[in-house]
Image: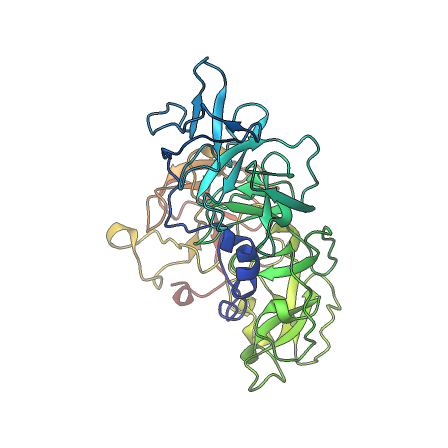
Length: 432
């Protein structure tokens, strides 16, 4: 997921210290991003086979010339590969996202020295009866396995061999690698990505193994996590959102009424789509929580109660007006803007022209471009001729009479044919 923050929330809604006992309950056990997994050779005497859990005197670890790229070897009879348990330090027997172990085996991140630092991967037997996702699980160091299913691993929650089963995903944070409704979390010190269930804090429905719907500012998103519920009430001092009781979030004192001198206080979450959002302090309004990142689609209605002057949507052009087709990302002032009479290499001062713009939507082909829910224009992946940014971007042509998505205007002012653009509601001098 993209990493963005509500203004002022960066320092007050950190993963640490709470998630250093979670994503770092989880992620502290995942190793360092400075450590690359590489195929290694142990040169050790007979080791344990991950496929059987028994000692195999003929087992040897493959060297870097193994065509499969895995730390495995075939026995002298030409039988199936044997995967050593434990793997050698930094040994990569398999890929935890591709799950490329032979049939009957699955790929797990593993700590080669038992320290909890995940510096290797190992092919391990798939349990006959795996436990459910987000259910309690147990790690078995003797067989380099656990009782989770394919594409999952037992993430420790207390530093022991016990934990909960979570899905595995890549460093790119692609939520599509997770189950529907889950979010792929990554961090600088993580050696794998992990999938956690997204949740609506206004109507939480979290699984028993990860029961608390918590705000994770690094994503930003609400996720079901195996952390205790907070207990700090409305208007009370807080260090981060994990301290606040369910339905509340920690916000800086300058965004709130009645929190002077406390640094930060808990305030209510609220529903942006509700005419009576539920802010008990009359000085507060329900303002958007996710900006400039829109947040997960099923959480975009969640706001928090704060002073109206800190609402980023009070600035013209920051937030989409009513009637915008949200299937095509709104071009806020944080996005690149274009003018037809730009200077050298397309750069311009934003003053002497009508402010029209397209959103930066990097693409490799038209299949990467969102399909609008309204209108008849279709996305094209084209080389962007003006300004900084991606060499290719999604544009929606309207030169053949196509109808633009709701909220966009057909314009040829950018100098490369009629395309659908956003026309900023802000004055040109504000669109820098």
